[in-house]
Image (tube, rainbow, N blue to C red):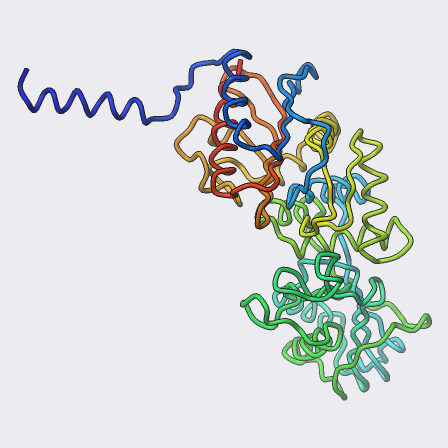
Length: 402
């Protein structure tokens, strides 16, 4: 045989050995072998897989043992936001005044910018809001623009940092603006969010042609203040997608406080977590949750909890917005660079989770054989590099299940 031909045949053989498995269906026994092989090197890990069409358990390894979930925790926060607020609900930022504008469009007193916990409120929204206010006929405010963040407590961070602002989150406020940042760089935090936002909104009003007499302040809104106009956030379905797809910690923690403010005892992390636990327990899951993002190592979730939540949401009238919020394998968000050349691409939607020695993945796959499976892989005390490889191999196997 010519040397060139032998070389080409060898190359084909090597390529076939290295290439991913084909799209042919794999039965339960073959799929289980793959899952067992990938879970074996992970002593502090658990997994659970079910057939969503039948509810049948397909695989389990320590499925009831709680683990640190990292950002898989966001599934519980966002599912609760959808359940409690509704997919089409919007959060509002309100403008009120000391007195109604007079015939010449003058407010004799203050303008109050009252935050309602919209985590998406930013420079663009503030500018549009200011122009909308100008269209009401308002020309001048003799007093101050006052930033009101009283819907939430004033703790700027979450439990993972003793409620202090840190690199990953902050500073949180009911009057959120640009993710609490003064620039696009993480860590450039607003020193006093309500005053900072009031100052930025003063500038937006003036660009819209509304003169403001005095500098920005931070305070509560008087009960006698007169409503002028409200700015509505994107829908809750959109806010949830902006949380889950890129795994946005700030959005998750702001939503959690908003849940506490609207449906709990206070606009606090603790009150929000209490509502989340009660809500997901009704869906069959019983996790230990102390924050919204999963940054805290006090969060504990079992694979069974995660799959129970996914199963409940999949069978509800909120299935579509919940599914649409999740990263898509090989295409979007935190899964955009994973399994891009496998049949799992586009078929599997899942939430990732990563801390220094924690890696997690939970979601569902529509398999090549028309099955729909839900899964959760939670790995603690692990190498995040190898955990991700093992999770991808397991997801690839599930995508072929039939």
